[in-house]
Length: 411
Ligand SMILES: *Cc1c(COP(=O)(O)O)cnc(C)c1O
Image (tube, rainbow, N blue to C red; front, side):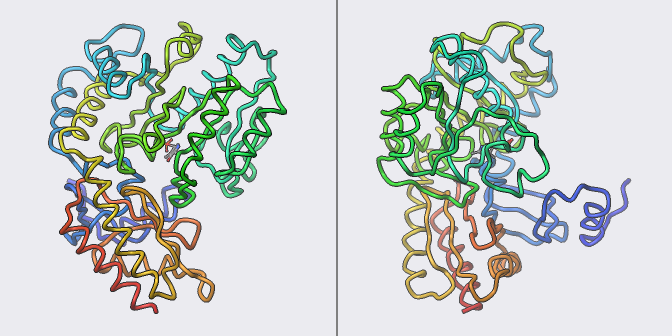
């Protein structure tokens, strides 16, 4: 038996033996169920981060966990050197579900973004006729697409990129939420093969672009044979109140990237979806992953998407998000600290006025924790509020009270 360690000891172990690449809130969790988490001392919390939107279906969803257990007893990994009896069924299911012809399964979000980049470049050379090594992909300022060397090559966040160079060329950064900037660069540069964009910038703090922005960008891409690549790793799978955030503007990305909640938070599963004309540029041996498309992931992926549909989670996220933002908006009008609430569905962020005290958002999150609600600040003055999509009206109202009470203490 392992000795039972105190929370302080457990945190000390992480500090001592783990790399310091995160700065966690001081809470040590050991159990999750639905919208709740419990720490090692049995204290119960509302989870308002949902593992960065990976647990949209709620913690340890019985249907997803059951699928995981059952499949793990039968077959976990074959590699793609052979067929397995789950992958094809998953591929048919997910392409039908999102309305695409083809899917390429990977594991983490960053891998799926890498895959989309490779696919887009290859399509640029082989279908669009761009000269070898000249392809350019347009990205947005303040993007977050993951942590690989190539992806951080086009990050605006110096924390994410400093001393990790030399960087991968072939990316052009333009301001987000700026249609003219995209139009200008696409008109000037015939080597552009794709536009990679988050429909809402999640890590930037639930930054929602103007209505019509995505549609206008999509139309520009269409008229110039530039692939519109939607990174819906965080916004997708019902988080923003529709199945995809792109559904708000009725656009269908040429390449769609999903991850996070594709597993209900149990297992890393990501995919790239596209049509045949694009996906078929990748031939056997030209891309791959040992774990990508394994039977565990395939079974869990189906269960996770079924839960979204069966429990109507997009609608619930939409409705609960409206309640949350409306109440927070009223609260912000009378607060010196809470400046602004923004977001869509249950991907929301509160902007904190930290002009008199820089660490205010962090302090608020510590107090929220004491009161039984877990949220994490981002970019020092933004607190993201993104509970599992299964949250009920009664629960969200209780959480609103906790949040308001806590912030009032700092006024
Ligand atoms: C989380 C995230 C990623 C990276 O996913 P990982 O699984 O952490 O590699 C990429 N894009 C967006 C929009 C994300 O939110």
